[in-house]
Length: 240
Image (cartoon, rainbow, N blue to C red; front, side):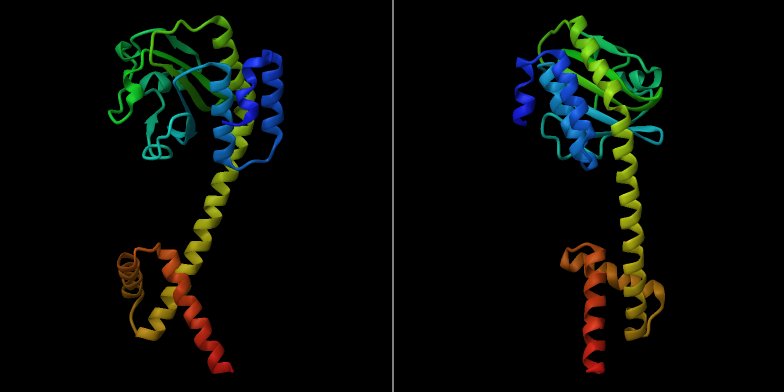
């Protein structure tokens, strides 16, 4: 956690909200923005867990977490309406459960998460101009009665960060599309080289790339780039 985040407990809520505004004004990458939000939330409310979900089409995808969850971040997803967090997203309303959160009929267990057995649960929607962007949930291992201040503060954070999360998500998706397009171009060129050099059809060329990727345990794009580099070097020698 950053020095700024650790110092929040010594400042007023106004100072905290000012810091959030300053942080969100910085043009940081998608996952850095989300991790900053998690830091700010956990500084505002001393909790044992904080998850940040971002809407992706009709699903909420876990994108950031206070506790290390490398196996589920960017993989765990729930449809809007599923679980307490999904209910919060669907209805755009806050839910605070002080104890036995797992007993709530809306609660959804994911099995691999120790947070499934935490007592207290608070979830708020992240909105941008009334549009759902995602959801924040915080959990406590022990029974915890969320104060009015805690609920209002986390809800306010959800409102404040909505536009930045949406902007960061759109930029992230654009970068992904750009990378996919670049990968497709590299793959097409590599397949063309293999077709020419091995006198095979397109499908066989692609299967050859896949085989090399598995054998060398390297991504397909890296194998394709290596083939293109070798072809460029070979052409350079011929021209020389």
